[in-house]
Length: 485
Image (cartoon, rainbow, N blue to C red; front, side, top):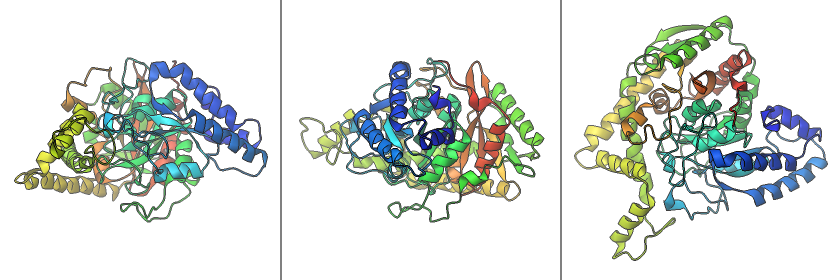
């Protein structure tokens, strides 16, 4: 992992100084994958021919001289629900096992424009529905820190590939915590941007009002670089925000003096592992030593977030996944009796149990006679949750708490208990409902497994979130810890 332990800026300098070639980087990535993938299973498909061809072309460009972009030549992984032209995009579902898109998602296109090299597509919970990566219809990804444990989800492959040193960075998607929670479980940095900052065009939709693409990296500085490349307005996405994109790296000053931090009592109460709570309190002491102040605050509607989220997300999933009917794309059942039978058999064969569970829940919530009682009420609760954040941000610059209530759990430990699994998102879901940015960074360990610190900011204030995360990183060594595969 020697090359992959370098910061993105260090690799960039080596490339520009011609001390390193893109081909060497790509070869190192595939060598590392060959050694670690049997234990981790982070990838669903590899792009070896395309990546090596691109590397050779980039090396020619490198020899011509001139300053290259910061992502130039860097091996990257892409979550398998972000469409990539000519590369199979399955969403880890049997339904799309044969789907090769004819276009790139905006985020993938921007990485291509920055001359990053796509190494392959990363494993996930099917259609991003899950928090452990055990819902992949192909195979579960394993946590590089201990392969008996889950890497988190749904972006489990994205997190595990970075933690295992297979790629420099990856893209994931976050609906209710699917970037931040696996980042916490795998001891890396995961950023969920403000809703609308990064285009969703080409992201296979789970819950359209919540889904957001973001980077998973080894450190905060790298996260800022990747966000810089993928953020921005996109006319192809009706929910894309037309806002100015600042220089995120300029925010990495290390100075947090005078920063006001709110710590929700609901995020450190019942259900939070004492070791996680201790790590968060110790992190707050670091901020105190750097001149920031913190106080306990309340987000009173947090207890309703899980119920509201699963009603809203499942309702949107029910609508979004109606397009998978065995006619337009994906698998088609053999020998149906009629059109309705084609729909039924194709969806029965194509979707896994968790996807079916959420489709049924969402269809029920949207059905006549129940819409007002469930879906509409959940929307009202969402407004109250957003109001909680707005009220706290009137007095505080950031909100800090744990990313997940516990470290990673064992594979198979919770997969048969969906309600327990859903509760793992208690600290991340309210942030998604409010649409504000948040980052997870390593802040400790318990029994050899990482613990994540969640830093939450005001809408479109990623700069302050990154500044605070970078300052903590500069005065601790948790981000330097690596799993011993």
